[in-house]
Image (tube, rainbow, N blue to C red; front, side, top):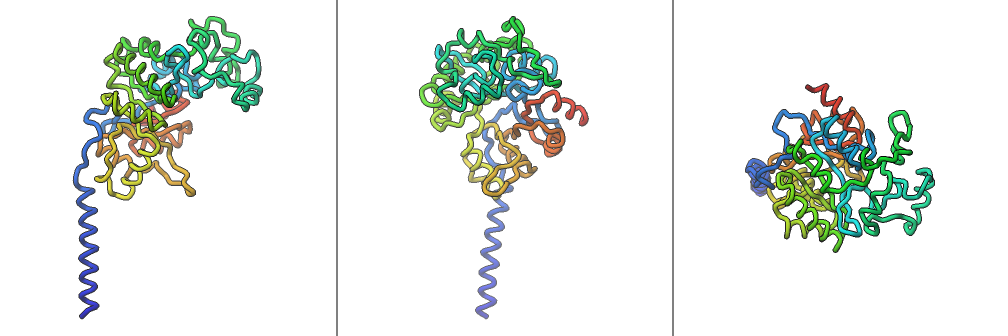
Length: 335
């Protein structure tokens, strides 16, 4: 008799737990953002985000790369990182220093430059240079075309070719009239006071190009910059910082999404995380749960055609790639 009673109690507890999980997964969660231009409609193919402007196809983070990506390849999103110069301009570059993307060290080979930069004191940091100083260098110097040729090594008309370092205001100006639907993913790389100033300048620049305010998502790895964005620029869409993204992923995979209180617009993730074991993130459940909150799921950095096909079939919103030309051709297969 006692055993039967115990089984009933156990069964009731299991039933309550099952009902609890059913309810929290059936109840529609609150949307993180109401209007999210980065979320694709059901059945639509993923957007193409040119990572660094498409560094495999053209010299990364240059106006040449951005123009080719938008005008020739027809990408949907420009993705890049922002740094603040000594005189207060926001420029595009992946690293905090420029040695590996231009001829600031003269005619050294890239291998020689990489060896030189092992000592951080030898690096030329963006924060220590003015825009005028940065603009004298050829940012296509080390680029190799598909034949392995450094076709811009001896370029002289840097401004005309679009091989100077690119500023955020120049990029907006370039496409504002011709491509009002263009989207942007940017990451503010500076921390502390420089990061605060970068936020302010980005916001002021967007005031001059107001139609782009709702078409840009801003990310950062720095907690204080994330707090600054939330406090002072709450109208700007934000990407999930690493910690916030991890919390969101865990709650979704455990099926307790109702308890997640995040407010970011885009989940920008690799296809897997290494946490002692490899945790796959290229799964339909995660995408579906993110979409319930109107969050866009964007995968980086995908340069393999088969991996692109897998993500397309999963229904993600965006694929970030160094090779937008390749992704464009893969997407054509599905049209």
